[in-house]
Image (cartoon, rainbow, N blue to C red; front, side, top):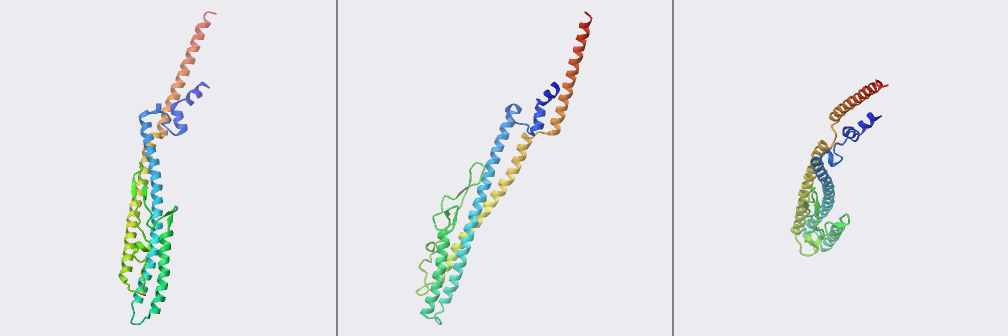
Length: 252
């Protein structure tokens, strides 16, 4: 019974049973401190990765909305070119074309004013402080999306029944294209961050594992040595007891 109790109290037995070599400072104060720092980095990187993934989703939402605005602008440009054909079209024809343009402009306004992510409006010009904490220590990058309202695009008063220029729509399309390019560049940067964090988490987990996890083969070997030593001690104790009993019997 004492043999089993002694082995069960062994550090190597505990390490094999738990699979962890570092459970207390006495197991290796310096290594435990390093492992704790690495685990803190892992948790920070994991949260940073989640933040970056949320930022990626936000940018995808903004880009999808910008794409819808670009489609409307392309149709407005097509109608503006049609309305320029004054040799054929009457004022009434131009007013009918303007009616469709007004509907398209309203569509742009609705997209710009109602596109949200987590209740934050993205394209109405109010989006600010778009910081993505993607690093292990809270570092990261700031998002810039740009406004896509009728005022920002310069088409609030665009009307083909009066003086107008197709260049006005071309400038609006150029602005949307520029905003989408900026969103795309930021999205690529976030992809890089997510990839970096994922790789760093794998490497840090491996490093922490080398420090914390029990080397089962090594621990089992050391435990076997302890068993042999303990068995030897018990045998020696038993032999000593027998010798003492023999000495004692000589007097009786």
